Image 1 (cartoon, rainbow, N blue to C red):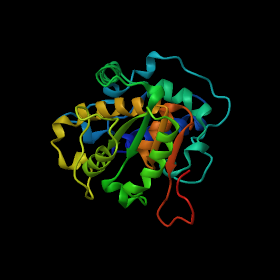
Image 2 (image 1 turned 90 degrees about the vertical axis):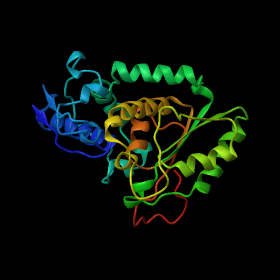
Image 3 (image 1 turned 90 degrees about the horizontal axis):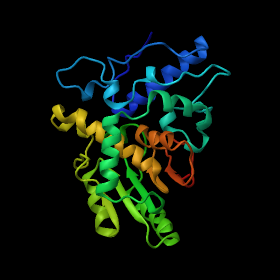
Length: 268
């Protein structure tokens, strides 16, 4: 059994779960038989101490195992994965782990289908504009809203009919972008956002709905991963957009860690 006790935000839990599974795989040259994540995702439980992993993901025991060949690393860079260059992730090595342990549950798949149909999402003509703000400022330097404009306009100039899917935990960002760009999608029925501050939405909103909205956010993340273009800043949420995409094609990432030595353009 592999026991994982890390707790935090949803995708922080996912990142550590992925890391621990891979660490076990490298050390033992095989996959764990059982993974106990009952101490994870506690922000999303309401009077429930059970393991809620399968509320988000399919049961890994129902999928095929794969054998050890060589050690696997999410990234070869010596830095925290969420603040790494997503172009340098080892996608081909990570993909089997994502498919086995992070395939969305049937509930999440249903939400994906609902969103696709309700908003008539055309992946080949959609650009995701994702801004993770609020408490993320404690961990990394954040871009300004205007920092996004040049990148958005560049995409728009390549495709005049492009649709922008705006996603953020900051209400002001969504209002700002909605006032500038007309042809856009904001998933108001499926997201929660708050006014700009130093907290997260799960800190300020009734916990009894956290499971439902975290399932919806997982669905949105997978939808964002399927879109033609992605403009994002760095963090675990953006990391999982890249992981579910299985490549870094057309990802424009703002990477500016605290105390960064980079002096020029922070967009990569």
